[in-house]
Length: 151
Length: 219
Image 1: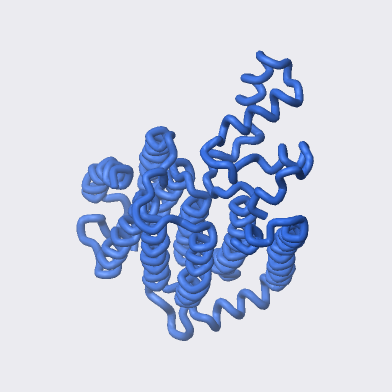
Image 2: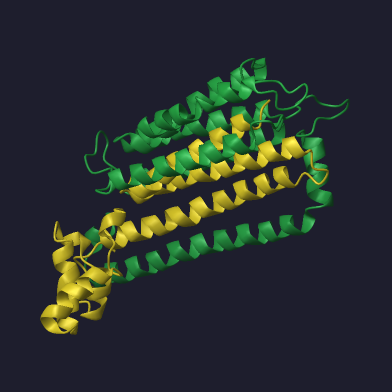
């Protein structure tokens, strides 16, 4: 078998996964695209191991390690996604922008980067429903409405 | 579908030209594929199509189910590359546990059943351009680099290269230390997942005692 066939298939799978990571909005769909990219790497490892006939079987051993690490990664990743969903009410990666610079620029021109200006910006950013309020701001302003937030 | 088809269209015209050139003595060309290559191509097309549907569909549960097809196709490719043990590990871990975990995650985050209009982000065209450029570049480079490389799939007498006997021998003779480190990593991941869940339960208990038990039970 030509090595170009599995190598090309791995490249195309990787690029499909790349598109999924960049274009998807749900965090779980992003994790699925990451799995596709990891499988492309595994396919490359197996193909090159069979081609080189390594006496240590480095490619197949590394593939097994990659599969185990991918299983651990998907477990931790899903735990984080569930935690974000419970705190924010959404697993939408486009709405997790507490660390973005743009809010600081908008409020910096208006209020000089004060605490009030910063705390207003995420509230206007995701004002679709009350459950998606930023948990950090609520923690900073005390727990007056902690019961309203989904725990 | 479009990233793949354009990438294939980019790669296809290269192959007949190179098959005509005598690159190496006794080197089989691309125009006379063997049976294994034909099966590999067909399974690869199915795998690639399933992967594209996985990243393109708007139904979240369907995406997880198409991911099963893609991962199973990769397992068949492992079998065709004579890596039997890897193939069955792939079926067990990926198709068996990872997809089940993803389905549980979709259910626990209350993914909408049916078409969700906001499954794709606003920058999907930028993502499409980036992945198309990466696919074109990488396919060109890979086909150009490995057009004369031939994998000899003929097995010597005895256990095959990818059988569980050979893999286990290599794993427990030469790769024992990474194997044990990996078990420590799995333990760390397990403890990490438990810690993530425990903190959440403590916060839920605190919120429930502070006065909204009905809301806390909703999770």
